[in-house]
Length: 70
Image (tube, rainbow, N blue to C red; front, side, top):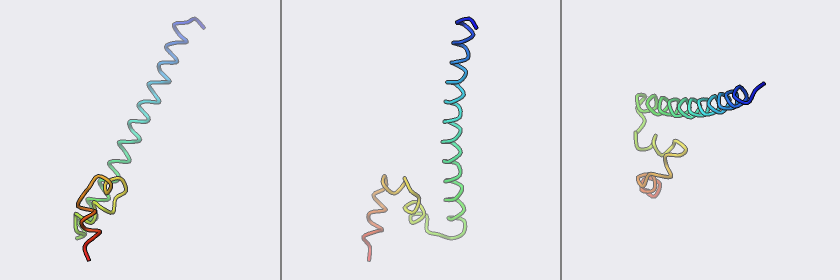
């Protein structure tokens, strides 16, 4: 195998890994958003749904306010 074929194969593997990573992250994000939308459609308070989703509550000051309400 000459050098050009070897490096082309390496770049294809790297590109495949990057594409797989992007598709995985996008799929997880889409799934989470569909769960949130389904909960809101079923009547759950949107603020509480946002606080219940892992990763969203750390960025949201409203979750702190809701957690401290009696």
